[in-house]
Image (cartoon, rainbow, N blue to C red; front, side, top):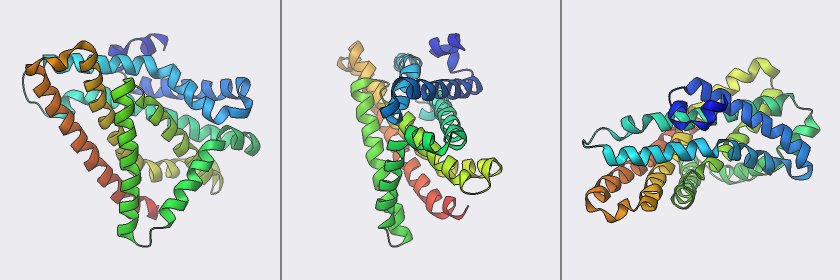
Length: 267
């Protein structure tokens, strides 16, 4: 497991093991957060989760920028970016599974402390989306809020490389709390798979949108670090790929908003 974490190239080839790594390190972060940062554990668990996986994501993004320079054909963008997209998505799934289970099995008072900030965020989201009076309004509200997160993901990647992993870990902790709460208030563990389906239907496209936007920013970030943005022959390729990735990100957000309103809400 340690070898997988410290070897981005190997990690890309083992999506199931990446899910397990996500589960392991987010679970470890909860225990360390409760032990070392009792009064601020809700934020500490996110930072500790990010810290544990930052190196492998940073390394994978460097590999993507290196591949960018070696591509000579205009292949489908998502096809040659698939390994890192799958890797980061699997990390997110692992985080979400872990946070969901721990928010469910921890004593209510402990769970409320561990996910205090996430709970406040959920209440704010309910207030914002609750103001929409019709389906069109709901879709536009959801899309607007998620576009803001895409923008933040892009900025984080542009200035911090793999800093977007914080956005993913935070969203995983919020989604995990929602899934755990819904499960606890219904049939318990039996309802857990249904809760995962309900929120993953629209949650996966949303996260893919954040990942593709972050990948676009990460490619530009590492190209700038290496000085590739001063080379005309490389700038064109990087610019085209970045625009395509951002376009795909917006399309995924629209799909996610429609799925959330028309399908997830009915489960």
